[in-house]
Image (tube, rainbow, N blue to C red; front, side, top):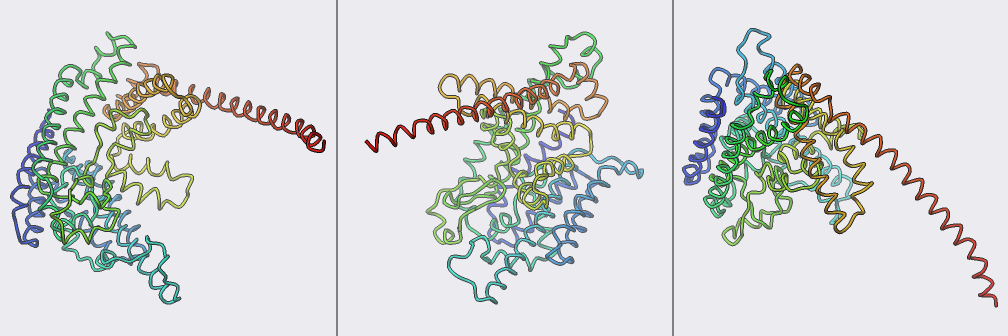
Length: 489
């Protein structure tokens, strides 16, 4: 583990330990300020001088949220926060020291949080305006769209203060590497008693066990198959093409184990503090929080059972066990995916380009290194190939045939993740191109051929289906006169 990883893990463990103390505080205002002070301490310890970037970006974002009209504050704040990432990541061009990795993660989360609250404010303002228009037109009725109903939360978003935004941004829960959560989740933590009845300690212990397991796998695999070896001359001069192709599997396995460790520890920070706990009946969703009304559950909070689904960022078992690449993406980094889906995909004006926009935004958010774009922008290409063959051979398969096809798709899924993920890890264009060239770009070429063959077979299949339909119609038409004669007789 490098020094950044060590600092990162130690800070996460300290945050987990702080959860027990924070949960015991009875005064909610005091708890709120303590949480943000702890967050600021973590940011300064991890970032030092570079914490000024976090302060400046939050100040600019807060000004955008509060000073720009609600109809446009989401766009302006998005541009400000994502625009600051350009300066933040290219500071070395201005003679400033390069930002360390952990600070980059903090800045990424601040970008989502501050711009996310602006999107929430704009959406709430639109609902309020629509409600006012319906009332003016006397069209309000019991059958109106529930999504247009104005809530007390919508009204509170219009009364946001700079203090609230800053406290939300620097809350120690999730400040290092997430998970992303809405301002509503943050507010509910201090205004509802759910944290006092949730199984905080048992949930934390369970997640800590998982984190230890993932970390052990990471350390062992990284010792056996270090990424640095894939950049050595020996790897390219003395190893066969087959060896280099197969090396992507342990490389991405190490990456997964590392990410699982970090994300699971981040979830432990939440569970130990009771953050993100909601009743099971509230129908919570990752990142979003409750999808059903839950205010009436506050009075009898002790009678409900609770979960921490809201702050679960990666469904590890689902990622590992699902059969396809598309399914795997849906279970990975789901809180961030929620943010992208709500604020980019659904709001992007040109519908046919929404998928491309969401992948491009994700790549940009991750960084400016070529590996981010090789990896993330390559995913849609693989999904097209996978979807084509799913319709051809998997969709209608049953029994043992379906099982065999599922296993083949599962193997291909992990090769796809590993092949693209290696580019993410190699990072620079020279390293990526050297590796891909050494394996003759086998991944991209194979997928391109499979897409071409799949499209051709799909056309043949549709043509055969049309001929069969015409033949069936002809037989039916030929048999109709005989049926008429028999009826007449």
